[in-house]
Amino acid sequence: MEQQQSDIHNKRSNVNESINQKDGEISNILNQQNSVEDEIEKLEAKMADTDQKIKEKEKQIDDTKAEIEKLKAEIKDLKERIEKRNEVLRDRARNIQQNGGSVKFIDVVLGANSFGDLVDRVSAVSTLVGADKQILDEQQADMEKLEADQKKVEEKLDSLNKMLEELEVLKADLKAQNEEKKVLMKELAAQKKHVENEKMSLEEQERVLKEQEAIISKAMADEKARIAEEERKAKEAAEAEKRAQQEAQAKAQEQAKAQEQAKAQEQAKAQEQNQAQTQTQTQSEKSTSAKSQTSGSTPGTNSSNDANLNAGGSGVLSWPASGRLSSGYGGRSGGTHFGIDIANAAGTPIYAAASGVVTRSDYSSSYGNVVYVFHPQLNLTTVYAHMSARSVSSGQNVSEGQKLGEIGNTGESFGNHLHFEVHNGPWSYHGGVNPMGYLK
Image (cartoon, rainbow, N blue to C red; front, side, top):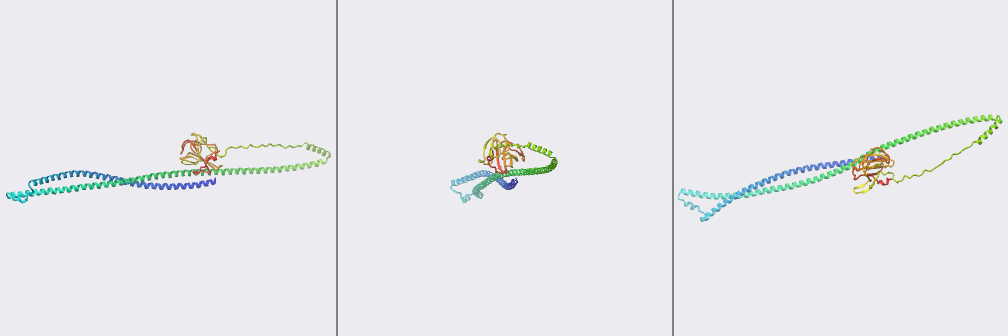
């Protein structure tokens, strides 16, 4: 048991080291998660900013389209003015053509009847020439303005559309990055959950090992107390035997002294008998007669041979429950099965396979209601899992056949059954051996 206690202590140290390692992994994953969350925040901020810019550009595009509509209306008016001027110019051209060509300025001057008429004629010609020139200038300016406005609006709309496309591409890129970060967050969350489950399993192992170490320490103390009690009883028995021997020796000495006194008395009596022959002869005859009457017997003894009883069975453990063997030890879908399953109705009693001490009576996420029993005389540990109820507590001594609980469907279980394991020495994680070779 001291060696087992040392082994358990070493296993606990290894398990605690693994727990610390898992804590480090969890801390590292948390740091990664925090970093990814920061990146996601930044990406979402950029996406929000990009969305705002897209909205602004869309508004600018809407404003530009409105401006284009306004310019279209202006262009329509401008085209109408140009068309009217073109019509005036065409009328002028037709008049000149109908009048036989252009009127010469000198003819207009020489045709004046008076100076006042001359002034009027010059003024009229100047007005006509100026009007024609103004029409042509306005026509040219309107045409240039039309082309410039159209070009400006088209360039602005094209620029806005390009910026909008760039923003849409940026938004799509940010969205893709954000999706990648969210996938990474899911992976980290799954990884964290896996490590936490491993840590929980290790913590459960550490708790079981701790309980086993405490129970074995108690068993060691009980065994030392038993040995001390046996030594005390043996010492008392030895002292009692010594006293008996001394008493027997004293009694023997008293008997020897009494025999010596009797012999002395016989010698004195013989001397008295020598004084009288007749009395001596009579005493001699009487002595001979007494001797002839003395006889002995030897008691007889009877002996008998006890019959050799065969307990039957080749194992050292009793079956823990009645029912059907629904699953054996070894590989199966989902991994190795480190025990056997005995299926029966819920509430079917479960019994201790041998006498021992309960090292664990608890609820486990995987085993459900579970009881571990350590059997010091066999150096074995038995496990009874998926119980609907437990009838014993940790540290309790149990005898073979004592009820431990009832068959159930707790923990990671599918259907009512007892999962039964056997471990050489104390319990160890995934250390179950095939129980069939240990059962009667």
